[in-house]
Length: 587
Ligand code: OXD
Ligand code: MN
Image 1 (cartoon, rainbow, N blue to C red):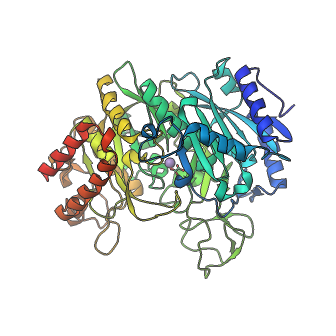
Image 2: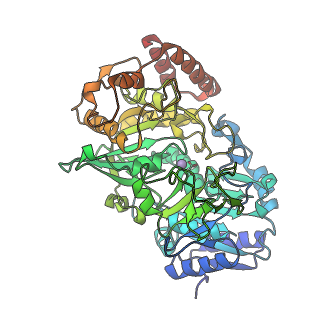
Image 3: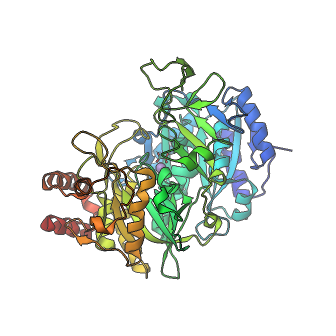
C-alpha cells in the first residue's frame, strides 16, 4: 500500500517518530518515489488547490503551482548557519547559536502539522555508488515539495539501499507554517548534518536537497572530507572529431547557468555539441588519477522561466514541454503557459502569476521575474550519459562568470591556480530576482557561493588553495562576462549559442592550442585567437571594447574587492592578499 513505512533503518524510524511527536501530523506518509505515487499525489494536489492541471494536449504531464505572493525567492536575511561559534560561520553568513535556534524552531514546529500529512522523503544526491553520493531524509507537510523533490533527486528506496543501517543521513525538517514571513527561517546545523526550514514554500528554501544540503551542508562536509561542493554547472563540449572536454562554471543565480549548460551551437559550429552534466551544482574531488572529478548531485533542473525561448535555449523549450512543474508563470484561457520573453507577442488575455486577469496593457508582469520550471534531466535532449557515472567527469577548466555591464572583459584566463582562486574569490555580479532585494546592484559573490557557503568564507578560500596540492592536472581557471554593455546600454556580445566561441578558446587553451596575450588581469585572447566567423555585424572595434581594461573602472573595482577582504580579514589566506598586491602592481 502507498504511504506505509518502507524502511527498517532504526535511526530513520526513530527520528521520524520524534519529529511526528513534535509536529503532530494527522498522518505520516512514507514516500516510495514510484510513478503510481506521483500520480496519486498530483491528483490530491489538484483537489487541494496546490496545483492546476495545465492543457494536457499542449503540455502533457505539466502542472502549475502559484505560491503565496510573499514567498517567491530565496530569503538570505532569514537563512542561518548555526555553528558552535560565530567565527566558524564567518561574516558573510547569518549566525545563531545552535541550541537557542533549535529551541526556537522546534517551538514554531510544535503542533504545526495538526490536520495535515507529514511526508517522509528519502532521497539520494549523486549517482548510486559514487564516493560522494549522500542520503537525505526530508520531512515536509507540502505536496509541492514532495513532487519537486521527486524530480530534483533520486527519491525512494534507492536512498534506503545506499544508507543501509547507517545513521549518517542528512535530517531535513520543513514546516510550511501558513507561509508567514515573520516565521520564516532557513537554518543549517552543519555539525549535526541537520536542516530546519519553516515558514516558506519557495523551492530554494524548501527543496532541502538543493541549496541547503548540496551546497551549504555539502560545502561544510567537503571542507572536513577534502572535496568541493560548488554552485557550478558541468558541461561536456564535443568537437567534430569527437574530442570531449569537461568544464565546470560558477555563475551567480539567474545569470544563465542553465542556458550555458544546454547551449546549442550556431550553424558555423557544425559538428560541435554541448552535453549537460549539471546546471546548478557540482560536487568535485581530487581523484587518484590526478584530475579533479565532478558529479551532479541532482536529477532535475529548477530553472528561471522568463527569458527562456527558442533563441536563448531551444533545448530547454523542448525539455519543459512535458512532465514539468511550473511555478508562478502566467496562463492562457486554454491553460497553456506564458511568460515575458517567451515570444514577441503576448496573447491578448492571460491569467497572471497571482491568478488575476492580465492584458498586454497591464502594468505588472504576467509571470513573476523569478518564476520557475522544475523539469527532470531525462527530458533534456542533450543530457550527457556520463551524468550517471559514479566516477564523474574529469574537469579541464573552471569558469567564474558574472553579470557586469562594465569593467570585466568578455574572457580572460588566470595565470595559475592561486591567481584563479583570487579571481573566483573576488567575483562581483549584479543581483537578480533569484533572491529578495537589491536587484541590479553589484555585490561581491565569491565563487557565486555568497548565499551558499556553509562556513567561514576565508576558510573556504584556504580549502580551495589546499585542493591544488592533491591535483596532478589542475583545471585551468577562467573568468567570463557575457553582459558587458556599450555607452547606449546595449549588450556588446550576442551571448547564448554564440558563447561557444568563447568556450572553444577555453578548450583550446586547456589543450595548448590557442594563443593569448598577457594583460594585467590574466591571459586575454586577441581577435585572431577567437573564431568570430559568421557573427553578423560584429566588428573588431566591438571586440576591442569587450576585451578592454579601463583603469578608472579597475580602481573602483579594487576598492570594492578590498571591502570584502576587510570583512574577511581575520580568516583570509595571505596568498590572496599577495595576489591583490600583484594585480595592483600590474595595473
Ligand atoms: C537557484 C538559485 O535556484 O541559485 O539555482 O537561486
Ligand atoms: Mn543556483
